[in-house]
Image 1: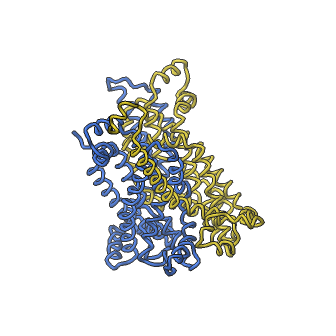
Image 2: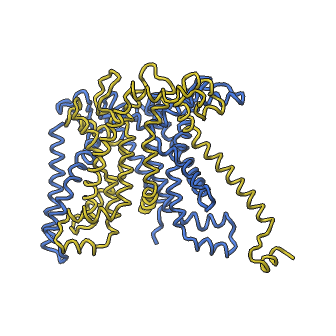
Image 3: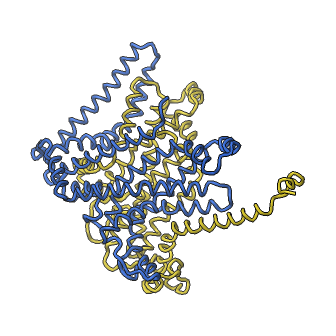
Length: 327
Length: 307
């Protein structure tokens, strides 16, 4: 294990020094003027970032790729206990999916969560931004209210809603619904409603952040275009679709991608709201439990690799569909 | 005479019909705004109100409007929950842990990533494009891919049994590829002439970075610092993984979020005490957002630009 780490490190070090030497050589052979001193200082200043990134960003990714094809188990960390097992982890993963095992539920729940939360959160953020985007007195107070949940952390959110959604007939939500004659329910224990509540909680907590980004983008939409559209006789909706929507396009793409990636990674909500249950577990939580609690690092890395590929593909498609058209 | 004619004669004349319409619109606007605002802040109001109440008072007020209002009739109990979580559960110790971690991370984060961003923005060397490409690639890879291998690396390197394991909390947070990217973008917009002037005076590049580049980049530095602080303060899964858990209701190295989770599972904790601990955990972030508001809004503007 240590030897492998050192080998990879050595490899990366060689790459780093290699680029350095190539830079020096290029400097001699190119017409462009590079200063040797500048190159040396540059590399010196890069060293802290590069070393830390080696250890904590690049190395884990390499390891993750490698572990996915081994039976590495954290209980047996010696190099002699790690065996190359080819695609067995991926075969096990597909088997488990076919047999409706935990991976099936985690994939299904994550997909459901993403499909519901991405439009809801972005839609809410956009509506709130449009709502606040005027000069009336008091909009600042509205903005503060909408943004307030962003300031509380995910675990605080989870604990707060755990109390609000308590299955006890005297719990907050049940007591409120009780005023309208609705029977007490177990919101988070019911497999039909638990994902919906996770969606509501996430959108409630997150959309203020995207609202601020939308607001700052709305401020940048050119005012003269609105005037021009108004002169041309466009009504509110026409102005919205011909001026606002194109103006928001880059921001929208940025928000879509960040919210999508964030939603795919949902883990703390199911972890704290319900614990490890079929009805609410998600991919990240599954990866964490397999790798950390059960110590099946090899298998967990295989799932993570699969998740990365799925997320990467969808992000790529989003960028292709919505990105700036090259003219 | 129509409204239009009146307006021509008297520039300050506003048609009466339109003004009533406007007032009605305004009222509708504020009613809708207040309703949506309530949806966002009622849970938070409940959190604050319940943190001041005794268990009976909470149970009594549930389901009525009183649950969102602190109980002023029982002033003797007003701060009891806070006294318990500070006195018995020692929440301030964990808050101090978090503050120390955050302070160390913030300082090194700005220096390490700032220097890297400075080199990639202002230095001239052939492999620059290669490094920029690597950074863009690393931003896209999700954390989940690497958290378990990262844990195994930390375990091999540091053992994770003693106080050294705080390095496992601090070091990975110091490097942030996204911050390098942000810094590079921002530093590129600083005119080269400033730097050359200092260069001619004989200042070293490190000196230029600290005396010129950082002071000129206050908005981006402040934004990064605020978000780094929030990131460390709110980080929860990773510290729980790497810090030793002795299991006797005391976790001397835990940052506040991890301690918060552990405190919830203490036998006999009341709802009011839970709510008080949630308020204490959230308060610094509220204060920080309020204080750094100006910079954060500017930071939002730059965040959305490049993608």
